[in-house]
Amino acid sequence: MNNLLISVVIPCYNEAENIPLLLSSIFMTLKTYNYEIILVNDGSNDETQTEIESASKKSPYIKYINFSRNFGHQAALKAGIDHAKGDCVITIDADLQKPPETMLEMITLWTEGHDIVTAVCKNEGQPSLIKKMTSTAYYWLLSKLADHQVIPNGADFRLIDRRIVDIIRNMNGQNLYLRGLCAWSGYRQATTFYREENRKIGNTKYSFKNMLNLASNGITSFSIKPLRFALSGGLFFAIMAFFYGIYALLMVWAGSTVPGWASIVASIVFLSGIQLIVLGVIGEYIGKLYREVSQRPAYLISKTNISISPGKNESDFFPEIPERGSAMV
Ligand code: UDP
Ligand code: MG
Image 1 (cartoon, rainbow, N blue to C red):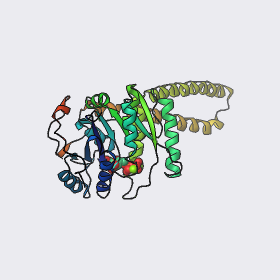
Image 2 (image 1 turned 45 degrees about the horizontal axis):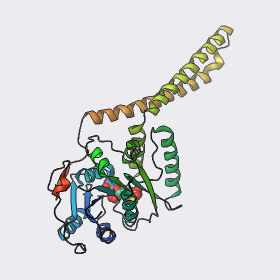
Image 3 (image 1 turned 90 degrees about the vertical axis):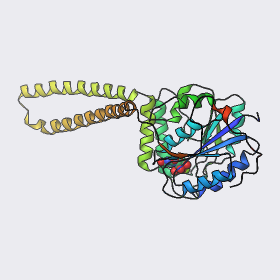
Image 4 (image 1 turned 60 degrees about the vertical axis):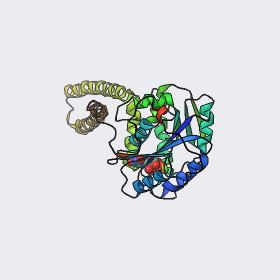
């Protein structure tokens, strides 16, 4: 057990003030384990990188990856996972909203044989009512559309075994949606619960636009059901329009056509709306195909202190870990 290495991956976007507190808390929590901490600076424009580099000088357990610009939370997670050498990887936010102590329960469940341990937020009423309602509606929709069951409220606070780490490393796509990927993998999953704190320092980095992107990515990454709905919806309205056409002809034959103006306008507007929705759904998938086909990397690194380029059996090269406790930030 003690020679197992635990990698902790932390995406950071303008989190300078949170980093020292978070690191001390992780050091305390994991003091009896072998671990490495990978901080991924996702193009922050505050002092995040300075904080990270100064922490890395004080502790040999701290690795960092500095992106050339902001590539987004999921890309930051992927970079950390790609460069992790651990037997398992735990992903946790930098904002201290998620308690590092929960990692201990995750590790226990992992050593009991689970490949994926997702921490689920348990407290009622913490996020704003709107965020709660949209998130409940979203997970309901996802459960109806996705082919694999995604754990509701399981944010990206999760432990994954090396086997899943290797799968993620081998994926080059830009549209990583870890929550769906874990459900899709079919490996043994467990959940643990935590209470989410309010953000004490800084603001949420997930704008409404970012959330919409993630939500749409979640649905379109793991399901083509929206395309099928578009097709059946389109067919349904085409049949309706056909019968309406017959009705209109009958009206012409009966010689009472003038009063039909309103219904014609209404049906044209309605059907064009449906067509636009269907086109939008198709466009979403085509856009996704385009991004995948263009094969651009999910992120670009401008600086890192991780010396060995990613490969499959690097855990052998991980430098000898000095005595714990010396690492104070
Ligand atoms: N984050 C990131 N890149 C981004 C946005 C967010 O790396 O473009 C990080 C952020 O620093 C934090 C985590 O992702 O560690 C979750 O973000 P946040 O706490 O803002 O989201 P919320 O908890 O409000 O959903
Ligand atoms: Mg947060």
